[in-house]
Length: 359
Image (cartoon, rainbow, N blue to C red; front, side):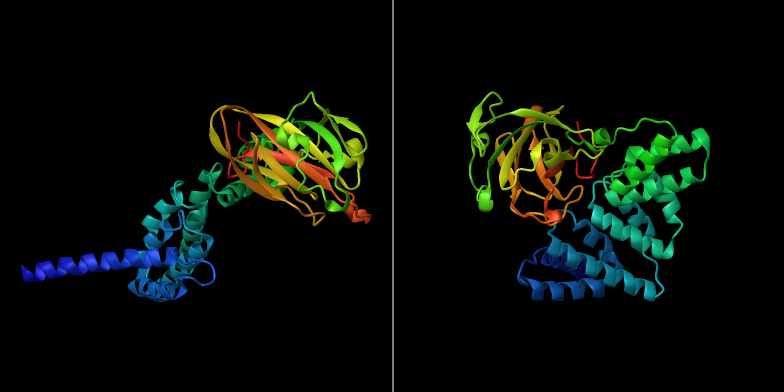
């Protein structure tokens, strides 16, 4: 009886220690806070071997970037030691983890990449099922396979395969490749709709931004979006007008479609209809300084000019209400006269965290 109790106690102590050690990895903070405890915990977890692989992966969910780095390095040290010792990783458990879309995408990817080291054929069984996976990386792999397959086909078979690939595509380069192939086959492709770009806006300005003084100024549209109002602007009275773009990637070009007012502020607003209350991301690309409001709440801004731009340059998590949501964008141009500093434009879309358009 004494031996049994001792064994139970040792089991409990071991389990408690493992949980404490993982918590120590999750507790690291900026400026090396908790790093000493994390090093000690990591060493113990590594010493205990493969039984800690899954708990480490599960701990990714909800952990900070710093903590994730500790979890990842500890996982990799254990996995590497197991493989060098000629032992197998817990394949069935790791495959099940990779398939679980409720787990951290980064952790699922880490498990997948280590599985491939011993079982590269798993790519052929796992990836084809991931066309609509919450992880953009897995989606990309699935889309790549379909694009490559379509290139080997002819006629309707190729077109059908490209269509299927488009359903999961969330990366700009892949969508461009697929759209080019489909359009060449006579298919209509609405890239704006696919990505969720907002193309029709009301716009007002210019307001003053000489010497870049306008970014913090609370001009009237920031206080209330009144589409019938008239205000004193930089060059006289200003009223809301309409601007729309047919650019595939939703680019509204103020400089070309209206005027490149140097040292100015413009405001653009539109309404996004959400079929339910939901979390979403607003993704923005612009070379100009900007602020963004959703339903009257300032959600983000960045005072930076002409450092380059790209699709999805900024990702802002937002909470959408069911029904109409008012989006207001403040976009600022400075007075630089170099050729590369003349763009006055933005593209904005509403999507989920995978990059798929939301309704």
